[in-house]
Length: 134
View 1 (cartoon, rainbow, N blue to C red):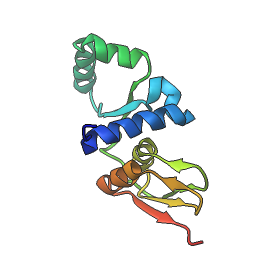
View 2 (view 1 turned 180 degrees about the vertical axis):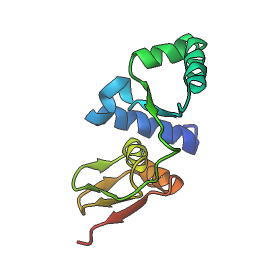
View 3 (view 1 turned 30 degrees about the horizontal axis):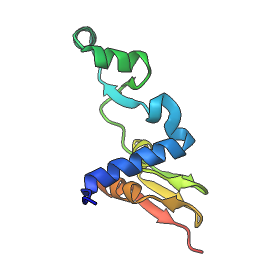
């Protein structure tokens, strides 16, 4: 049997988790990608509209299907603050990405399972995971 690279293993784990977890089934297996857009003037709005008009079919389809969403960025990126709490279930890589957008720490209960991908992504995104003591 040929050896799988770590990236191939990660891909297989992601696919398995997407099939197993209900939150990942939204939008065809993934949470929507969120893009912050800074629009402070008419020129910014015009530039953004032209970028969308020039987008390829794949990007326009992702927008139409809700897989790509835009949010208005106000005064630059918002600082991450506070702690998010998770008491049961599985902490996945997708959840880490979502939580890290607004929080700097996640507090997890003793019965919460953390996937290796989630732990790696949290480290990469500088999201602190704090587990309750038994």
